[in-house]
Image (cartoon, rainbow, N blue to C red; front, side, top):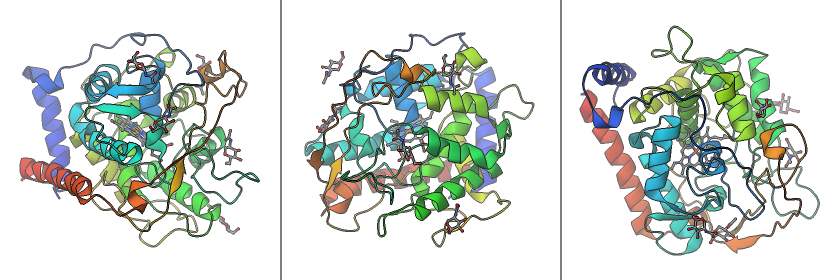
Length: 368
Ligand code: HEM
Ligand SMILES: *[C@@H]1O[C@H](CO)[C@@H](O)[C@H](O)[C@H]1NC(C)=O
Ligand SMILES: *[C@@H]1O[C@H](CO)[C@@H](O)[C@H](O)[C@H]1NC(C)=O
Ligand SMILES: *[C@@H]1O[C@H](CO)[C@@H](O)[C@H](O)[C@H]1NC(C)=O
Ligand SMILES: *[C@@H]1O[C@H](CO)[C@@H](O)[C@H](O)[C@H]1NC(C)=O
Ligand SMILES: *[C@@H]1O[C@H](CO)[C@@H](O)[C@H](O)[C@H]1NC(C)=O
């Protein structure tokens, strides 16, 4: 692993290079005043993910609005143009997504992601203790329900993340680590015995993503120690739309894997004010290589959630997601096999792990 300092140095160097030399992957984004395409709420048949960023792109039609049959390249292009996220920052997530796609559909997905809903396959890429989603299994499951909605934004779960901030307008690394631990403790307190699995390697990446796109560029040390602007973060997650009306724009220098890995490692390394309880052993401190998926632990089949996208469910209120023409609830459950709970086709996992290892070794050699 490269040292934090080395990653930081590399990142600062990138910023420097981009201001003087035309470097293709670092072309600055010209800030706009609005999204390139207007927001349109998802309808009941549209597929959405447990990922606020992919949902935002779909809601704005920057990737297929129906959330299905999404070309891999369209995801790369949309993140670069709309969120200021370079391909290097999402390569690992893309590999993971296509591994999940193959297992859920039972066929190689090639370069077309079947739909965004497959990403909610529990304990695969999707994980427990999310910032804004319920875990697939929770002790308060409604009577007769097989599982909770682990896919759509949940306002009370997200509020339990924001509560940690005690009204602060910005989030620093320390506070993000505190939020992460609080979410783990709350999940553990509300889990079904035997269900909870900690997923630091994926969540730390997601924390890095939030610093990458919602860092407040009005603050003096934005390029060194970014702080998330809470009103932007809240708008983004709640509406699954770009917070342009609050003065946001994407980072002008696109963020790559160096930035995301640096910020996420800083989060895990930051000393928290108090340690919530309960936590699994090893919850505090650094993790395995960021981004790696859970491995097979048992042989069980789970149903993939097919809840309607949040907007289509018409929960009522003033936010964008509540503006919807649909009222019909058509949630059904399709039985699928959780790849990570089955005997794995070794080739895919080997490919995923080899990829993760190669990403890490490229980073190490760059900073050596
Ligand atoms: C191809 C690229 C990507 C894929 C396949 C993907 C997929 C996912 C998935 C499956 C989750 C659910 C994890 C959970 O259970 O909480 C997730 C969460 C998340 N994603 Fe993405 N993601 C991608 C790129 C991004 C990017 C570029 C950003 C930010 C700019 C982002 C931001 C987030 C955040 C913040 C969460 C956590 C949500 C929460 O905890 O409530 N993602 N993503
Ligand atoms: C997404 O694809 C899966 C697997 O083919 C399928 O079971 C599910 O119904 C699809 N979801 C939507 C919303 O299209
Ligand atoms: C989703 O939209 C794309 C682009 O319009 C289209 O090619 C595809 O067939 C649609 N898929 C479904 C399942 O509706
Ligand atoms: C959101 O999560 C809470 C638990 O924190 C749960 O009681 C509630 O039913 C969920 N809301 C929706 C709309 O799923
Ligand atoms: C979890 O439950 C225990 C026992 O009720 C409580 O003491 C603790 O504060 C709870 N943790 C969180 C983070 O709420
Ligand atoms: C969501 O968008 C609406 C309409 O643009 C806005 O009024 C509202 O404040 C946003 N919600 C949040 C939580 O920022």
